[in-house]
Image (cartoon, rainbow, N blue to C red; front, top):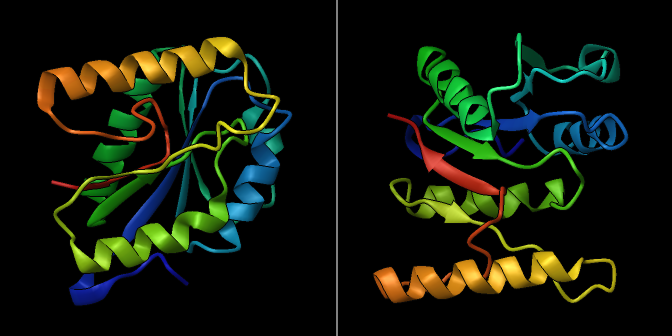
Length: 164
């Protein structure tokens, strides 16, 4: 399973969720097929997240109210640090990311454990809204202007971070 890594590394995969009951279970199931450690952070959903992931081998942490995706990721980072994980890998609950690509993230983390990795969604499909295409281009442009760095998808929720 690709949740471990070289030199004692251990990655925690996290799905922050707010009202994605239509896609969450499938994303979690596919994630568990390639990752050993999965945490779902329910950010105060009004939908029954616990029911959606019932019976799956994962950990569920819930916020009592919606605090935003950033707060959900910070909750996951604290959990990862407390439980001794070396890395946090996030992917969105809406099905835009392919959990099977986690194997690429894990291989990259073995090569450079100190790096931050950002995945890229496929924007070449016809179902991507024009506002998403514009938002990606706009954000990518400003990242390049401000830092000189280029990323294909600055807004991607599919990311890997070292913990600590």
